Image 1 (cartoon, rainbow, N blue to C red):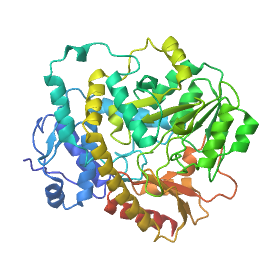
Image 2 (image 1 turned 90 degrees about the vertical axis):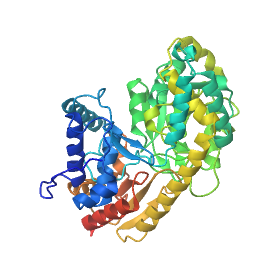
Image 3 (image 1 turned 180 degrees about the vertical axis):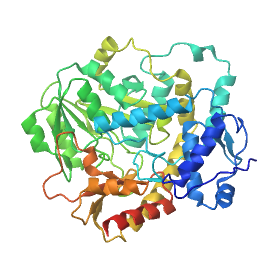
Image 4 (image 1 turned 30 degrees about the horizontal axis):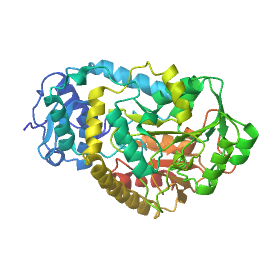
Length: 478
């Protein structure tokens, strides 16, 4: 095991975890730490450097996410093979470019782990409990089979065995009624929206909740759809605005609206389905965001499960429930749109590698996914309860909401300052928090008299990080 002689400068202005990250990254890139060499445990290194264990864990997590180190369950951390990584300078330039693009688009950047010691991002997951052994076993068995079909071109809509597994899961977990033939597999929701635009055709008017998931809004805008930012009430998207604007398509997240956290009640769902059925070629895109993680009340089935007229297009992903790295999403098309799909898009090659699809199929069919999901529900429920209890003690919070599901909640602030001001003040202390207005569609703003509101994610945070982050916000506001 290596002993790392890292000189930490507490007066440099650079967070301590970033100094540890830089030291190990540079030494692996230079070959001074060899591939496969064991690194000290987080406990040993934190004791040796006289820093908190969470500081070392944050550095290791970033190195792990970038491929500089590898984690072997029960054994520790090892220097990884970086032969396929960009040179350090090139990688940093690319990160800066991505952050700049995110800022230009108005999409809150997820490339913030290197810059902040604590990040209340709603995009970060907890990966310590992932069944690495099961995933490794599936991978080895798949490659050991010497199956030539693994290297042949697959089906455009995705491998049938995977679509069958997804179909079974969606029926039992979300009440989605469909056949495997209605399911399209793709590398991410944005790609599926691009496909969908070729199925539905151009020139559509799309009503979308505001605030919203801005990547979906940007994708649909880039497809030259006329976007209609639509306000929300306590039940979700406003029906009176829908009636006035008369869109062709409505894009909604009824199970757990992002970022507001609204769970759409049955009455509003039925109103939307009735609207869609009143006129031909009207559709509802149901983005089933964060539907797997619900902490209060009974599970609510998908909107698609109540659709009797074939007007709901259902989109989901394994990014939250497994990992965003596998890049597997799925779309359920109404049967009446399948002919258009195969005519306009059936010749496209699948964007998800066949090996990845087969591994995911085995993960689903082998029961691994169900066991992992149940475990993560308990983990995130525990984080949710701890975080909520900590926030309820703070007198700078006026109201907390959006806490029924998902991995973030919203906190209205007792302050005359704007939420964006709080975000900037926190940045100076190495803490990343998010203002609700960052998720407003460009050209719109919160209603007059609305409380300054922060969006606070907790999925990847430890209890200590939650406490430290809350203490920082308290120091800013009080």
